[in-house]
Length: 178
Image 1 (cartoon, rainbow, N blue to C red):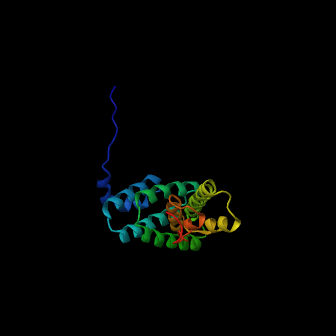
Image 2: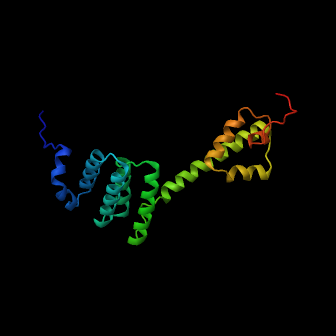
Image 3: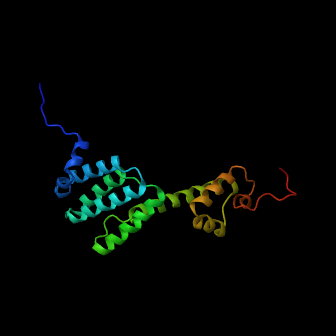
């Protein structure tokens, strides 16, 4: 059996950039994202291209589902450093508000982040209860209101703490035994 099919080196398509930009095929956007990911190593340039490609998603009139799926690919291919990722999110939210098409905003990511935060808090609450017995409402609320860094610190302290107060940072009293 013999299979024959046309091949294409993606890097060669850079010379046909204008055609890619005009092509309504979603794969053209994926190719453009690949080319820019290979070409742009500094974060600011990559962020600018990522935003430009996201704008193309909207301009091409794809369905909401197609935009979300393509965005996931673009987001994966054109990853940004944390600081620039935050800037990108702000620009994206502003663009979506202006375009009145809130498909991609960081709400989905924020929801996942909040879910992870809540999971960490619930894990710490469970471990505190196992080690020290039932917690009061004030302690429960303190854990639920804590940020990720604080939860991490408390989780680490839990390993050696002898009291719940030591976990929260009160530390052992000088007159207590070690």
